[in-house]
Every structure is written in C-alpha cells, then in structure tokens.
Length: 274
Image (cartoon, rainbow, N blue to C red):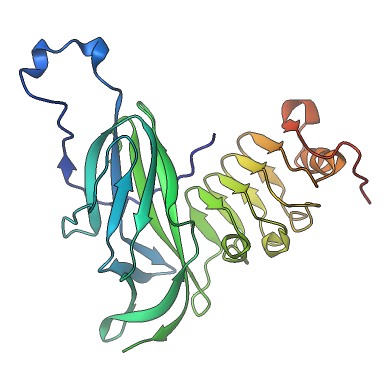
C-alpha cells in the first residue's frame, strides 16, 4: 500500500532506538531489524505567513509504542530511529494552531482535516513524508537518512489561500477531500480511500507530482478531476465497487496514459459512462 507523505525542511534532534544490551558490534547484523526515522515539523509558511502547531501531543503505535513524542524546541517534535513497519500516529486533543499576526503569533480557530490517527509506514532506505492538514478561517480566539518519516504542517486558510501542497496527502472521508478545494498542485502523492463518495471539491487540481491512488471508495464517478492533466507517478484505481471501469480508463486517457500502463482493477465492469 502506498505510504502517504509530505516534507518540510526543518532542523531536528536525533534520538536512537535502543536495540538491546551488549556490544552492538557483536550483534549479528542479519538479525537486526531494518531501521528508519521519524520526524515531525510543526511549522510552515504559506504566502509568507507563518503558522505553527502549539501544545500538541503526538503518540505512536505499532512495532514500537511511544506515548509522547518529545519536542526539541526548534519547531520539530523529535527524530526517533524506528524499526521498519506499519505505524499509526495520533494527534491528541489540546492542540492549538497559531498564525503570525502583526503583534506576534496568536491562536486561531482551526480543525484537523487529515485522518487521525494517521496510518504511516516506515521503510528502510526511503524517505516517507506525511502531511497534517489544518483548515482555518484565521479567526482569533483570544533530515533524510534511510526510512525518514517527515510530517509537514499544511494549512488551508480561507483568508490566505494557497494553491499547492508540498508532500503527499491521504483522504479517507469527505472532509479530507473538501479541505483540498482550490488546490492546484500536490508536490507529492494523493491517495483517496474508504468513505470518499465525491471528488467535486478537486475541480481545481491540475497536477500531482507523485502517484494517484483511488482505492476502496464509495465513488460512482470521477467527476471533479476534469482539470487533472498531469500525474508524475503511478495511477492506481482499484476495488471501487460502484465506479465504472470505463470512468477509470477515461481518466487514464485524459492523463495521456495507456490504460494498460495504469493499475485498473476491481471496479464496476458493467458500469456505464456518459
């Protein structure tokens, strides 16, 4: 399954994962797990405006359980060396999104528009980058070693609209797709899965640098992707029981891809296209 990622350059503190006692040089290297790293930047800049996540607590579950990923005070929570495998990262209640104003950073009303907990995969010799997307109207309330997982803070601010997102995005529900309205390009991959039933909010999307994956959804059409002209990576449209296969093939043709070169399977072969 495609991992979903987004990158933001940030300084980070390296924290080793301890494999056990004894002299590491004496360990059988073939018995050691493949290791990766996790980093979570908590700040971003949109059109010259700074945003940051304050008082947020993240926990990690999977092959390694971490109740609280510690901040290092530089806009990054932590870098932790982890065994390769599937994880879930949870952002707990109590987080506050802040926007830079003339008087300094001030808290704004916001909602998290990404899945939470967020499934991620750590792989050795690969950088996995995850986008945490926050949506706001700015209303005041008073490194890359093998297996690096980077979390980027992405902000959809109606008073400061952005047209691109740096990194990969995961949409598992309607509100995750709605948060991408007016986004023109994604400099990463886009995966759409689970309870998504419409893509009309993606009418501005013209370019995806990485992969496009549409899998296991409740979609019955791909209306909303008419502006999509470029996908730099793979196209996978699979296991969407109500989506006509001809609609998937038509999207591949729209992108200039032979349907044989796209992964199209498990859709509605009897479905009728307009």
